[in-house]
Structures are given as C-alpha cells and as structure tokens.
Length: 143
Image (cartoon, rainbow, N blue to C red; front, side):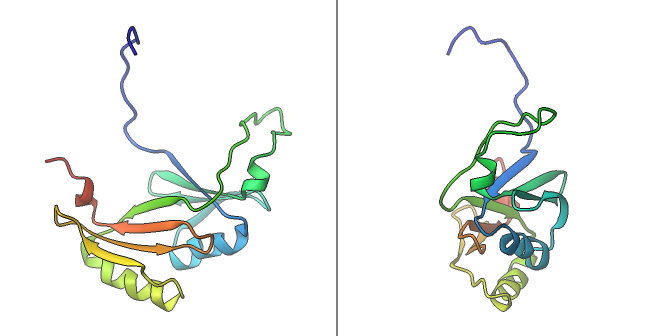
C-alpha cells in the first residue's frame, strides 16, 4: 500500500473481546476466579470488566450480532463463534499460585511451559471454552 499518510501507530489495546453463549456463567468466572471488576453490562448481551487501563468485553454472540436498536449507540453488529484467546500478563512469581487457584476452581491448566526466551506461560479454558493464558510479560519483551 503506497501513498498512505503518515500516522502514529496504536500504543496498546483498549478493549479485548471474548464471546460466551452462557454469558452469566462466564462473567462469574472472570469476576470470582480471575478477580476482575465488573463494569457496564446489559443483561443477556454483554458484561464488561476493568482490565488495567483497558476493558475485557464479554459478549453473547447471538445478541451482539444483532443490528443496533439505539440510534445514540450505533455500534455495528459483531461477534465470533468458537474459542478465542486472551493472554493476561502475570508476575512470574504469581504463576504457581494461579495454577493452584485455577485447579481449585475446576479449571485445570492444560499447558505449563517455558518459552525459548525464558518466559513461562500457563494455559487453561474459561467456561465458554476460550483459551486463556497467563504469561510472564517478558514473553514479548523487545531485545
């Protein structure tokens, strides 16, 4: 692509979206097991969670795929089917605690390994089947 005007690239993700058919079950997981603070919600459509300076948006796909019915909020329909992925940054010293907490909550770790650069990641599933990861932020550190 040529002749594009110069622009500053984005600096971080402001919103991350996951999808769950059983919205309340999945929302309870992010609130009670992961410990995120609930934000705005529309019953049966979405529950949003504070995630640092950004937000985790949890949508029920059959609801978010519908055209908007509020002219003041003309957000286009969107949604995804099947498992998504989200990686939370976690302090390396906290990962063993997360393994224990997740197992106690009935969400055992599927994979626990160290990447070639020395960063450790753990993977598990949320109630909707999304692949969730906790990783040492050094995973994506610039060399």
